[in-house]
Length: 414
Image 1 (tube, rainbow, N blue to C red):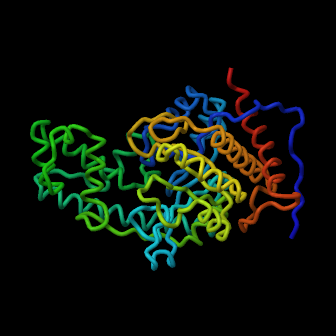
Image 2: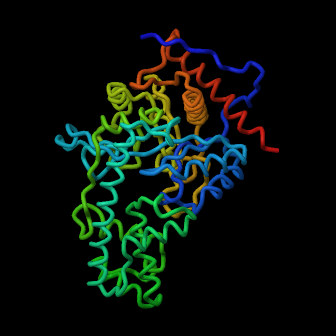
């Protein structure tokens, strides 16, 4: 059915010409994050001249209202999204790696420009409840296994699941019911317990026993590196505290994003894995595979990628009519810049900057229009907006509306 597009562009608006700094994928606390509150996220973005930030939290969105208020006060447009762990059964059966380098079939799916994150439909509410319940069951089981293993290694008082939740809530200044733990939360809690119970010169010995191999005192003195070691040595597949995830299907993840008023998006790992996951290689085949699944939006985390790889994927996506975003995640304690760049801090090319800006503007337009009850870039079934002579005309139309939305948000900047 053809939908009528109502022209809401403001001919008097004069947004800045050319691509500006944007970041479409940041994890906000109480998700595991480099930041301890959303106000710091926004302040850091403003300092760097970032004009739009896309949140990508797992499991719970109640922090988004605080994020929206802080962003509005800083002249930054808040874009609401999520990240979901799904599985494609056929690719799992064939052993095909998608965008997880260790688990065949596992597929990370993002949602962008979600207009109904705080008023989910019954379908969305049921899916979110299932995802959160299974995640909490998994985290509880993993915390118990970690505690038992840590005691055997000599730790007298490993943290309980309730203690970890309460610590995260206190650290991030949110109610405990907003906290849905991730593996990194558990690893940080165990690292902090070791640091609390043992003096610096005694930590290497207990950590060596805990991690099943000699731990260098230098590693023992690096809290972030130690958290990564705890995850890799104790929490991954085949390790003592591992508990399998109960991932939902790709189809359910796709439906959830649409039910939340968003656009399904494929987060691309590319050479963030070595070798590149077969599903993603070559990028032209990946683009075809995404179109076959009704996915018209992709994403890169360029800090994982070499500049030429970023450009290869951006070019392949755009040639296929797929928009491509960029983000930084900020899902570790490492405080990297808010402005996306390539591996090693290499600058983005003009092609990449222009493409990332274009896609962010389209997301901004979709979110704004859907919040107003108007048709967005995709409809409730994931179909692209109709009524345009071609795909490029559609993109240009939505980009202009998004540019105006970002420009309007910046009015408070003085």
